[in-house]
View 1 (cartoon, rainbow, N blue to C red):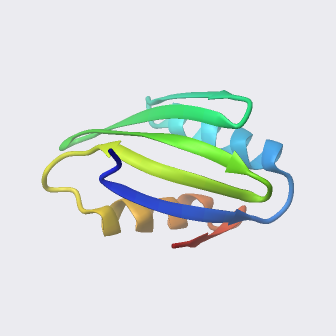
View 2 (tube, rainbow, N blue to C red):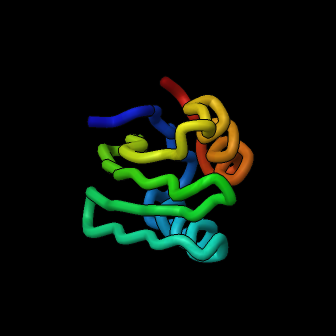
View 3 (tube, rainbow, N blue to C red):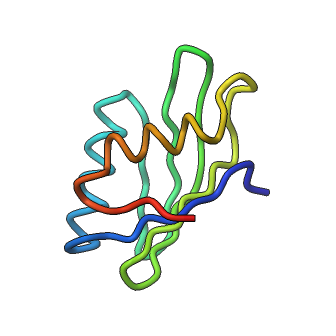
Amino acid sequence: MAKCKFNIAVQGSIEAFVSQAQDIIEAARGVFDQNGTEGTFYVPTPLGRVKGTTLVSGETVTIAITGKPLFVSCGAIRRKVEERMGQAGTVTQ
């Protein structure tokens, strides 16, 4: 069950968005595996690993956080995604 869930309305191509997400996650020493419309990822943080799933539907990517450190809020994760992916899409509920 997801601990946090939010959508990103992608501006531009989904393929470019997924590629950018993969580059960002791997640069942070994480792992990103997208297979068609579904994917999984994890990113290490100083407080522990953030992990989740992605689901592509049309021009929307749904991110579900399935694991996170106790002291990392869903809001903090969402803000980090907005900061990193903001030029490629708009984070919505």
